[in-house]
Image 1 (cartoon, one colour):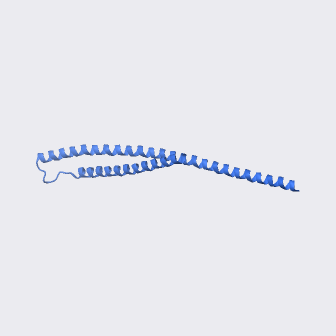
Image 2 (cartoon, rainbow, N blue to C red):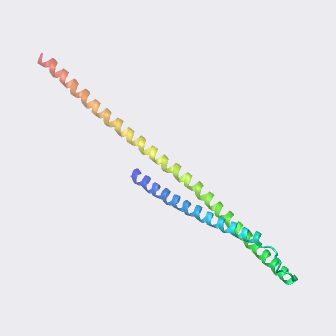
Image 3 (tube, rainbow, N blue to C red):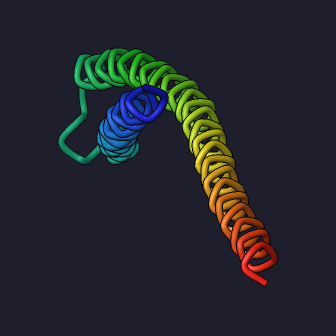
Length: 139
């Protein structure tokens, strides 16, 4: 019964670890998007073709919009990092629980083996006692 429960907990741990890996991958993708967005913003400069005030005003407006997007993306990355951290903590707890169950099962198995050895030893002692009694009565 306890072994079945341990197997269920191990399956839960495996599922949690898979989810953590997916979160890590998603976080990395969002970080790459943020880096690309920042690189694009940094690459936006005035050039020789921008001579009118309207061109400069449009560039400033675009940069303002892109900075807003960059801020949203930064918040998204921070949220994903928090999710990833919480998932990692949950995985550590689940791993500890699963390993604890393994320890309990190992102790139970060890007790069963010790009990079996003790029973066998008692049976051998009984056989020896009967053999000694039998040998005394035959002499």
